[in-house]
Image (tube, rainbow, N blue to C red):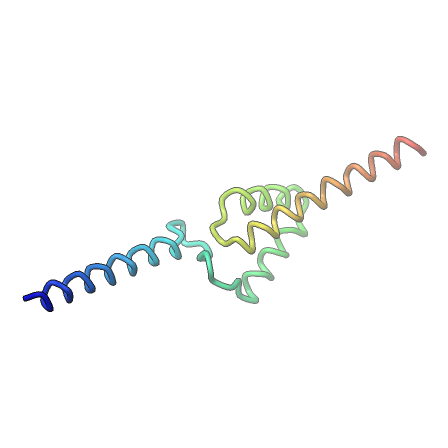
Length: 97
């Protein structure tokens, strides 16, 4: 009798952990998953978007705010900081010259 209850508890715990892991790794919008590596094609597409003026800022803001993949989120945040630093540098240079 106790073996049976133990097996039920183990199977329930296993099912619960699988459900939690599935929710943790699945992005409902169909984007990249949390622990998933970004493919070569994914990086080419992202870098292609960053070449287009105005679209690059919008794409970076969307990635920085909405993306579930921490790697892409950190990349987008770092690129936004670099754009701000570059913009301030250009502004200061034009103010001096």
